[in-house]
Length: 108
Picture (cartoon, rainbow, N blue to C red):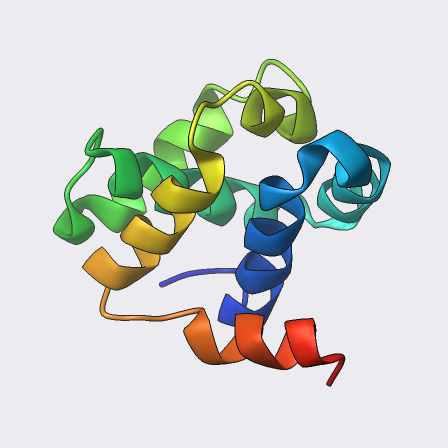
């Protein structure tokens, strides 16, 4: 079970697409997440890039906790194609951030 909402992941996806102008906002948002939310976020990203399978979600979350040696925002910013991996991870888990992203873009 994810310990972060799809809506929060959608916000992170949108900021990740605009890191050149939104890095400060991205860092502040990720830093405000709980450790559980950060571990779930990293797990979704890992599933999206193929490091774990969707059915290994709990193992991915546990691994994210165990291997959290750098600040989460730093780790994510250093990950190429972050927004794609997050969206792919959600899709692999049977979730979608598309509606949340559209709502956020419209300012809802």
